[in-house]
Image 1: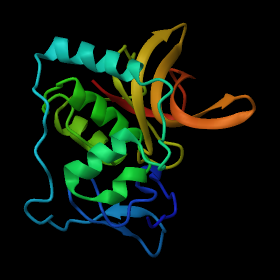
Image 2: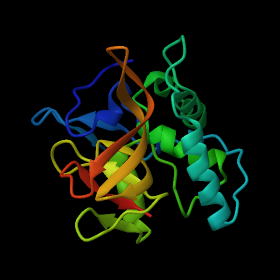
Image 3: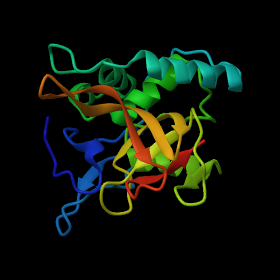
Length: 212
């Protein structure tokens, strides 16, 4: 797959000219940033979902537990993830199989748990996920909000766009503890990529906000 510069959104690295809703990703030749165009996708670019939506609280509890059940998961021998393979099938684009996968991880867990689409709308591009939560009126910026277990958390490691996402596991003593896909942890002196737990000060500048 073509690898673009990280720019403001690392989640498009490795995905050539495609976004999760069928729109085209373009590279701004002036800034080097990856941006989503307004091109309308062709009909039939997505495949039907297979999950059955559960009621709100039941589904969100299942979502939370599904995320935690994935701890330690990562890429397979082919270099793909189950999350990317699922999304690739969903949008009929094989480039997602080995793409950056933190957003697809969150979306896969929500889909597997039967979370209704009007609670967590599928996304594989972090800024799109932020936009969905804002459109639904359930977005909270970092400042002035106390996160809770089950919130979807978004990060920005530079600039104003989100470039990483995960789930809030719990909040304690001023720190938000998370589970995130496509992150690293030290195992035997090696940085191993996978689904891991992390923690941040609730006021950390890297936290952009939360979808709830």
